[in-house]
Length: 166
Ligand SMILES: CC(C)(COP(=O)(O)OP(=O)(O)OC[C@H]1O[C@@H](n2cnc3c(N)ncnc32)[C@H](O)[C@@H]1OP(=O)(O)O)[C@@H](O)C(=O)NCCC(=O)NCCS
Image (cartoon, rainbow, N blue to C red):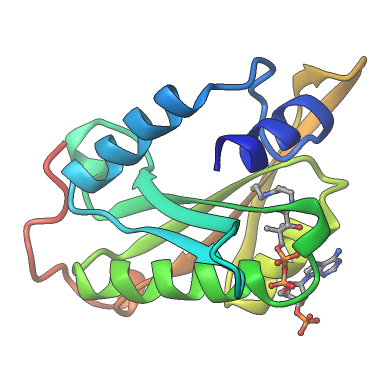
């Protein structure tokens, strides 16, 4: 997973990080997600090699955000376009619904990221807005595209559980 994510850090615009975290740091991020009871899904190929992953983290840490999460999804370059991202994110969405959460937010870098925008659209996310030129990477300004997907009826229903402990 560190390799897959590191590739995007160094060569892509899907993340605004510019220094690739090593596997120890990735393990710490994984542990932090699991410690909150949130899902982290790993996809392997037939040989057991990791080809993609997706997870949900808190959207923001102030307590009123406790029913919202932000998703992340990364697929190895050679495994893209084969349904790996969809399978992983679909499972994360299902798990977050089971947790009683109400909104999933995709913070997508950059407006040129047709793969991520297409994947999220295909799983029921709709465009919520865009932040122009909030990032600068690879020598150019980067936008953020915000997409949202209601969980458990979104704003149409009151929350039932306690949400995330923030
Ligand atoms: C975005 C990403 C995770 C998509 O994963 P993937 O495994 O390639 O996507 P899938 O094959 O599961 O595609 C699922 C759907 O997404 C859409 N999609 C995927 N790639 C697309 C592309 N390049 N252009 C338009 N739509 C695309 C399609 O609707 C597709 O369904 P279809 O194949 O039935 O048409 C992958 O391209 C990736 O890792 N990109 C770099 C990292 C990144 O940007 N992550 C998101 C951070 S916000």
